[in-house]
Amino acid sequence: MGEQYFKGVLAAYLGANFFNSPVDEWQIDVIKENISHYCEATIDHSQLSFQEKEEQKRQMKQSLEVYIQGVKDEMRAAGRFQR
Image 1 (spheres, helix red, strand yellow):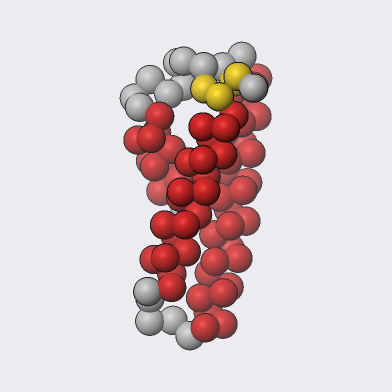
Image 2: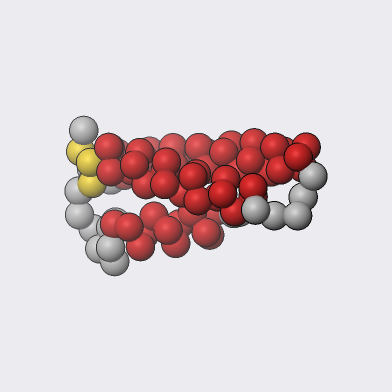
């Protein structure tokens, strides 16, 4: 699961004008949790071994965390982030 997937889901949740209007931090956090749950379920239902699934989940969570933090930082810098 890569950044393009995360970006698409995030944009879909927040709407087409997501980068043009203020967004609350809690909204981003809820979306992050939903993306994580969906990705975990997808991994759990794959044909991978238990160890491979756990590694995929770990990588996904790391990537998602980095991506979401980047989104938050970008929005703060642009003055479009509400707390």
